[in-house]
Image 1 (cartoon, rainbow, N blue to C red):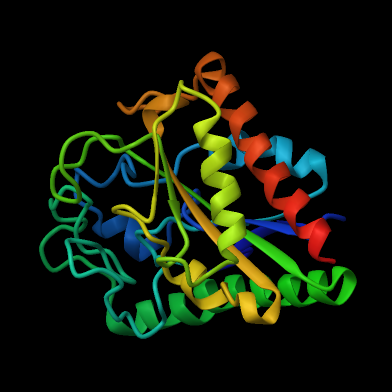
Image 2: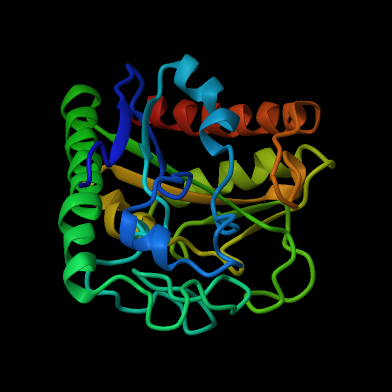
Amino acid sequence: MISDPFEFQSGNLPLLISIPHAGTRLTPAVEHGLSEDARPLPDTDWHIPLLYDFARQMGASMLVGNYSRFVIDLNRPADDKPLYTTATTGLYPDVLFDGRPSFLPAQAPSDEERAGYLQNVWHPYHQQLQNELARLKALHGYALLFDAHSIASVIPRLFDGKLPDLNLGTNSGASCASAISDRLVACCEQQQQFTHVLNGRFKGGYITRAYGQPQQKQHAVQLELAQVNYMSEQYPFAFDAARAAPLQHLLQQMLETMLAWSEQQA
């Protein structure tokens, strides 16, 4: 039985924070079939709602998926077409980011069960996302979507070496006005603690690509954070408030930069 596929809080700013990969809830079929390597849920975007709690207090809307990406990946297209030509995971991840199996042999959920996840987890999240973007545009004349993610800083299967601390993605410039990405990069360049890149290994997943429609006054940016900057990357993946504080300060500056630009366009 699937219930409450997401948590949502409506805000008064023209900004929606989407957090699709922080969920840890499992269905019985997924919980039964997970491999030992996958049981700690290593590919979760741990603590992202906590990290961005300041944005909720600022007045941003917040949409958080409750179910684990091992049930269904909310940042992949419903038809499961690959988003990257390099190594990746799909709508129903059968391997971990490092390539190890997600499920025990012959223990993955059935096609029928996964069709139910699409209907009862994926579609409600995206419907809520669309509804809120429409509300923000009706209220403010435009909408900003910030898709918030994190990942372990070293995953050889996905990228070489250590990942930059902040990985901004705008679908190679197609998902938002260039002035937004220019200002976000400038914001990152004003500090020296965290490394950054624009449209590097992570250019934005399905959410950024599908809902970033700058010609419709709907601007989307994805940020993939290296988890080492705010938590332990080893089980049990503990949040580190002291380490997170300077990162949160920079994140708030980045969101305020987006909002300041948008106010000039209204």
